[in-house]
Image (cartoon, each protein chain N blue to C red):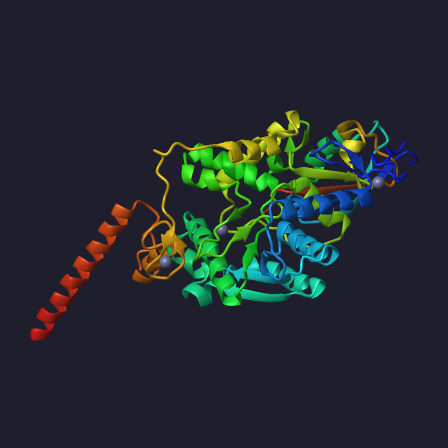
Length: 343
Length: 100
Ligand SMILES: [Zn+2]
Ligand SMILES: [Zn+2]
Ligand SMILES: [Zn+2]
């Protein structure tokens, strides 16, 4: 016999919510899912009436559901937002090609404008070419660093007031665990923030799906028949995150509330004043937010352009030595050429 | 061949990559035993799971993070591994483990 929906609507339940263990029918699940995201948006004051908001769209499940729900809530609750889709094309053959098709479908389905920015345009390098230079071991460093800044650049270009990203509760709990294991206190202290940036020179980032479980995002997309793209980055699945995720999923089996509990722990952590916090400033080369001088993207880019792709992957001192060595060599070569030309 | 059990298996969001990239297939299970999701998973592992079995099966169940829907209903409402398969059942496996 079928289990009935907990809200006594008389319908057959189709899923068990991970957060509450309630059995709900499709309609009641949609309503609860959307109402909770609306609650997150209003209680955390993520948007203001009349703002222009870029939805960071990858074609994956999270950003597809985010775009869908933001459009729906914007109309239902009259947020007065202008929503646009912003996608980054890393230039990975066969990966982004397909996912960008999905983003274009989002554009048509949700009637939003779409801006696709390529690494090629932004940095002069595609990921395919970067991988050809450096091999597959460190490429996700490039991928990640460039992507983070690419969204800022795209947002500036579009003149938006904020960027909404699809980070869900599971992602954030994983990130808390990863930052603890790495001792990265700076990231740890801000990774649970629902809104980051937003000082004079950076565009705020918001996470409307912060309290939304991955299972519910997937179920929502499934029952709403939303089309999304799913393949891991072909170059290197993030092994470290994979472990954190598997660990959390195992814990969840014995303690279903673990995701929310870890996010809560992350939110409540306080750091001693003696813990050094990087000061977030502006990169003097490119003008985008950075806690280093020059920013990581500029260092990686310099490495690529100098033919020293490992620059910026290790310690800064090592990188400085690499540059110094190269300049010494070039000076020597110049001298050698001069000598040769003298004859 | 009365009593043979015909069911449909579906895979999505990357789960199909472990099964010859086939998204939907009909299978016939012999009537020699009583079929539950538990021994269905074992059968799948022995017969159609091609790549990296640890990404799909952990112990005697699916790897955490793979959602199972039986006739479009969350298996967590239906007894999970103990659910007894019926003729024409549709079992869908959705991976949540891929990027979003
Ligand atoms: Zn209901
Ligand atoms: Zn990557
Ligand atoms: Zn810079």
